[in-house]
Amino acid sequence: MVSEREFKDFMAGVCTPVAVVTAMADGLPHGTTVGSLTSLSLCPPMVTVALDRRSRLLPRIRRTGRFGVNLLGAGQDGVAGVFASPTADRFDQVEWYADEGLPRLRDAPGWLVCRPRRFVAGGDHLLLLGLVDRVSGAKGAAPLVHGHRMFGTHSAFTRRNHLSITDQIAAFAR
Image (cartoon, rainbow, N blue to C red; front, side, top):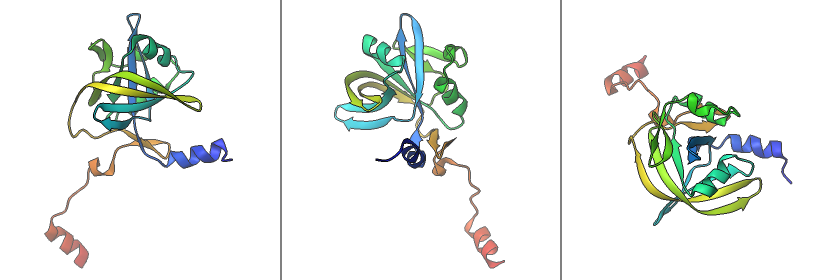
């Protein structure tokens, strides 16, 4: 059997998108950082998100039957850290507003409104299969990703100095 450490070390090399899953319950916002957002189906549009079985967000999603997905952008690693921490006042540390009754982070470039269709057991987590009711956000925004235990973005979104072909030839000739 593979040890927990071996598995964690291997999975650290897998880049994942970073999102904050949210719900509104009893008039209060709730949310947590996830690195498990994946598209599942185009017809109907569905995503999957994995939450720890001990997550305080999970019973709130079950009770309300709705959740939001805030896809974070490059440079929002501080937001990811806030929602990954055990602190109770997470929403006091970020700008947010209610969108269709769900907590939406003001600066997150992507937003989904979802309804859970099924909860699937998977070890110490539950996989939420969510039906997507609404999508919005900025197209082409650089995503926040997590890999090798660091935050960053996809290399195609990083700034590069593009040299003209003349400059490249001149540099190569030196």
